Length: 250
Image (cartoon, rainbow, N blue to C red):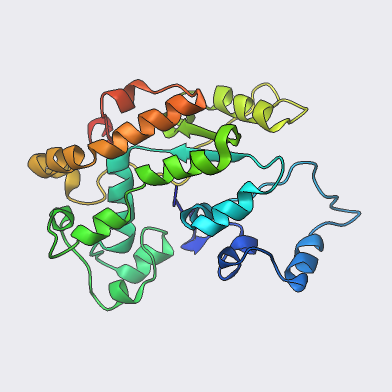
């Protein structure tokens, strides 16, 4: 929830439901025409359409509008709450040695604050209400999962990132079946990993006391993930039960 994909520092979410449109119930006539022009005799409209726009699900009336679409399915991938917080902090508030280079590599957002040097050099700041504490509370997401369930019911499928890491073929096969795809993936299809980086991003994994304190603070988020996965009939991975993070994986 609320996760953005970037390629060369540029967002690659579907822009049709992007700026402006997500605050309206219906698109304009010109937007509908532009959308329909994507398809032609050379590029026929697919039987199943989808879009990637996690930000849509942070706006209540957008969720209400989407819930009215018959047959719409919501696939939500969730990840370790502590790793998610660190990743977003790294992109939005961390003091990078070279902000422009970080933006180009997709490690940072091109915000006015970062470009002006308004940043943080330690993850400890998010535990301080006088520094970045409000930022931390803004990016908790456990409550959003319950809201999604109330809007979409059985049409919401939540699964954990660990499944992508450990058994992607089985997961993608299950998702394809859920969406009604008629042809399975070819045997030997390679499911590659994208948008990940090993090693340290911030000082979090090097600060044991901060790591333990932040993980305890995020315990309600971990419990919300367990409940969301249970409600979807998805497996709860051992890593989530053990509260294992990228700091332990290395």
